[in-house]
Length: 434
Image 1 (cartoon, one colour):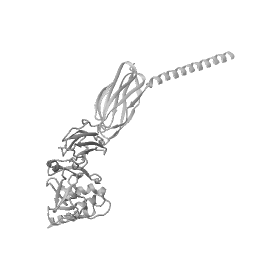
Image 2: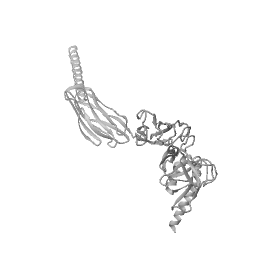
Image 3: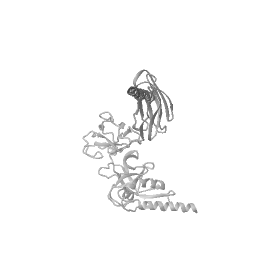
Image 4: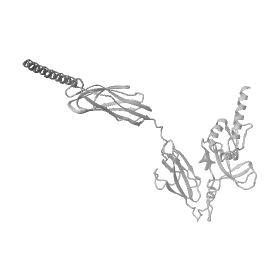
């Protein structure tokens, strides 16, 4: 009985041991199969996103790492309305219009696979550039796993910046020679002319078509120094001033250079005396002298200094921004208090270079009034009067008085002027109805 129990006991433990070994083998076999069932993983990344300007080119880099690679196939997507695909280096690429298919391969087995895709920013906006992996293999052609990746590109459309170019490309004088020779970076020049030269004009060419140029100072020369200034205003508002000092020599015989029109001791010929006489004009039977210098004279913001031709002589004038209003400064030759304005002081007068004539009143079309009113609006502050509808003259015109116009420019409002225009417009509409 004891022997039988001993044999059964041994048989029992034998069975247990065999079972344990079998289970162990099963577990070991399951573990091997499980390990083979899950492929190794690789890392995929995209870089090169960010913010760019419209029209710029940018590069997106696709990279696989954390394995010894043999090949990979991937699909890159993006918004084709924001980005335009240009080219690819490091991979065979096909596609465009929002999708690019990439095939990368390396027979030597590298620790990374990468390629670079070039795009052009064509529209303001934002897009996500994404990559999804179709398949990727290591050097032993064992399949690997790889997730997806993405990067964001933002395209900004910056409006064209205003030009800051306030240079001249050329500048010259009608008499004499600039010293030193003209250079866009040099802003101060001197010119010497003989006494026989009584007029010297300045010509200037702007370097940037979007800039504007104004020339100040009288073209009529006094004996001695005459200063002309050429101011260039860039599109951005930046200014640059070129200064020309023109020295007119004294006449032989000791003529002084201190007088504005060449007055001084010593004799002059009749022709020289005539040349140095002030420029005169007649309005309403009264003789006026054309002021050839605006020194200490306030020029409104909506006007700029310029030059015009009067009786074959150059005179300084001021012009409105639109150029449709030209004003000259006159003073009575004698303080008689007579004439059209009944004033003895220096005053602005309308000037027509076409008619070679100064006038106290000026007619403007309705469109011209609105255009000019817009340019004066920023300077209008308080209510003012001074404009009347013309009786006669051209149809649909408005007659302005020079003094009242200047009052409007220097601080009045356009209230009455605009009321007059509205009244004129109503008159026009009524006439059309009838």
